[in-house]
Image (cartoon, rainbow, N blue to C red; front, side):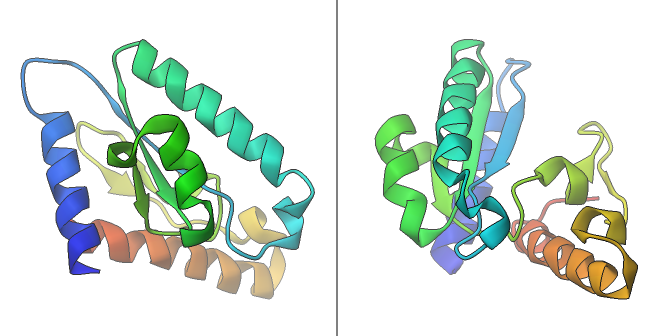
Length: 142
């Protein structure tokens, strides 16, 4: 885990320094076991790889948070410097991560993101907690 965090911290440092106004776009691979995404997993991966290529082509940076199982597929397409093994529990990073890159804040991910109700809120909190732990370990300030 230390290696992943050092890599992530270094990578963010590389992407965020210099005179460039490049953005860092973070994507999450489909979760390891998830029947919700299972039927469309290949389409999601293809979309994310093509999207990442466009991000790079436009001068911005991309980082894929991948499962161990999918790491090689992303790394072969985008290079291993753009992929780390740090699986998220959902692909919709915009829902449970940070908002406002100038002054980052994190809103609570609500039950609606995981089907609603008390069980949905429990799952939403777990999904967000995985990202929160990564953000704190990489010394992201918010």
